[in-house]
Image (cartoon, rainbow, N blue to C red; front, top):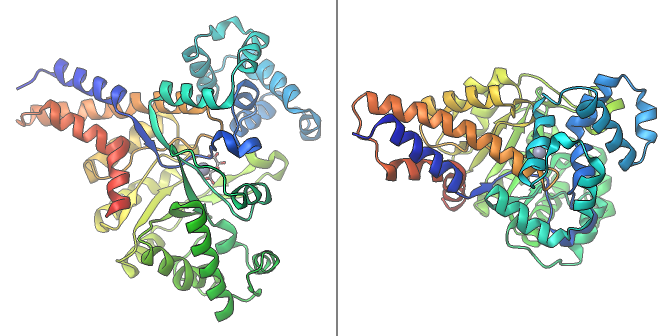
Length: 412
Ligand code: RAT
Ligand code: ZN
């Protein structure tokens, strides 16, 4: 029987050396031009840090938004890293990134950091970051109704095989009746009412865009009030267009549930809140569509236990990630331990949600450490219970968590 120290070493090795398939980010490859965000000014103006700096400084919203990006980054650096200790998770992330790139973050030499980023090219910086973060594939979030993104796709950009696409359809489910006119402006004869004609045009839209971007799955974020089934356009579009198309094409449908958009609009992207959602909607959609595959993550801590239990009940449901406001060390640890106890190795513990390329470095370094520590405690408990834990078993478990559970689910 291996000693606890040996098991710890196996896990540390596996967790660091296994390359990650990051199943949800907001990143783009270099040839997507302005959509690819990277570098120190983008890192500092991450919406999490915008929210934190406005709160800490009590600056007027208008005064903050009137600054250009460089001035906002200066302000956030001064407010959160110079005047105060950067002890929040989002602040610590910037410190980890700078450190891993070889800087002494304590030098507080923002001008020096900027010089380094100015000397990088987007393409080679992607190689460097993916290597440092040990991430082999990054899943984007692609919205064909976003005019900038749409223009780029319509030019058939060359694909970087490390960046996979996902068709994100929030407005198609939640934006009725207005989305009807947005679709008809693009040549789909959809009206405001989700009638039969709109439904068949929606299916055409979905199929065309799945093909164009080679989508790996179709995704939506939903409010805590989401109810399924309901007498609303969302249920109708799901039942008649989204789920049949996903089924025909064997694509998962990803539900990210619990976001209340724009609870404080003054904060713009940083102004979204959260709430506890009704798990019975997840149960019903999985039960009613056994031939569909679902990915699901939930935003409120209060939903995490019932989501893990729901995962036990439905093999067609893949529980994934610690999303956004639960992507913090104390909660990742709690959620990952609980999911392991209820689901064994059959879930996807984490995604990064990175919006800025460099964030892959910290989001994965921080998450790997926690996934490793949860696995150590579980494998040592197992050894103490009398099981002969092997290195192969440890390696397979880590690979399932960081990459294989997702590819197996896609291919099933
Ligand atoms: O985590 C985030 O950055 C959020 O702003 C959202 O993008 C969220 O993850 C989403 O995909 O809606
Ligand atoms: Zn996201």
